Amino acid sequence: ALLQTNGSAPPARKPKPKSKSTPVLINEDEIAAGIEAQQFTAHYQPKIDCVTGAIVGFEALARWEHPQVGLVMPDRFIAQAEYHGLIDGITRQISEEVVAWLGKVYRQRDFEISINLSAKSIDDQRVAEEISALCARHGIATTRVVLEVTETSAMGNPTAALELLTRFRIRGFQLSIDDFGIGYSSLAQLSRLPFSELKIDKSFVMTAHSSEESQKIVAALVGLARNLGLRTTAEGVEDAWTLDFLKELGCDHAQGYFIARPMPGPEVEAWVRQREETSDAQRLQ
Ligand code: C2E
Ligand code: MG
Ligand code: MG
Ligand code: MG
Image (cartoon, rainbow, N blue to C red; front, side, top):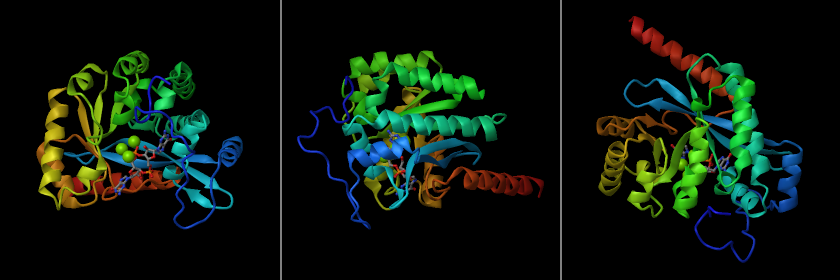
């Protein structure tokens, strides 16, 4: 792969799945079986405009509805799926579901959908083609789709990244650099890559209210993004103070538990209705 998850060689041993509440280990065969049985689904986390509070769109986050274990979170299967070469099957299932959902429920709205791409997938021509084809089939402009790539994966090999990311940009997709601030980007490289959005890593955002250091980092990242002409999204907004702080800084968009948790499609649809009814009522007062 031209783009490596961490710029180093694959681990010598297979990564051991973390299991907090359950001793069930998720192995390669189980992930393959889960893909075959179409058990991967998306939860949607809303993203809002910091100033107006309007809904901008949703980030699709993968969940595995495992028949024995229940809902499995991505930290227990994404790295494993990447390591065993199974991630494309998951990316495909998630993309098909979310583009169809947007086309069915919100075709007439300008909501965006963000999809997380593995470093291993950006490397693959077919991913760009497949998601473009999905958009065409469901009547969704590719400009409404934001593809998120983590800082560490994009910066592993910036020359290759430029070529690969440009392929997505040519098709109209927006590109977002995710978890920004925890990697080791060269700012010159960042300015050359065709990103449209910078997502400030939640570790800084979640601690901003209690740490002056985090506040300074968030402020610096918002400034950097603005100077490079990138939209800024803060992830991990957990309280009202932080949302206000971000608004003061001029951060564009916010995402986090304070606004809404990731939810299954029908729940997010109810959330959107309720939020828009409430803001309509407030406007009429
Ligand atoms: P991410 O893309 O940075 O997504 C944000 C993560 O932060 C999500 O965790 C989300 O639920 C969580 N989060 C959102 N708001 C808050 C908050 O206010 N506080 C806290 N503490 N957490 C918040 P999740 O869903 O467990 O996903 C973890 C990671 O797994 C994602 O991080 C992403 O890197 C990866 N991932 C998820 N879905 C996919 C997928 O379909 N494909 C690939 N390749 N990776 C995925
Ligand atoms: Mg993301
Ligand atoms: Mg992130
Ligand atoms: Mg993250």
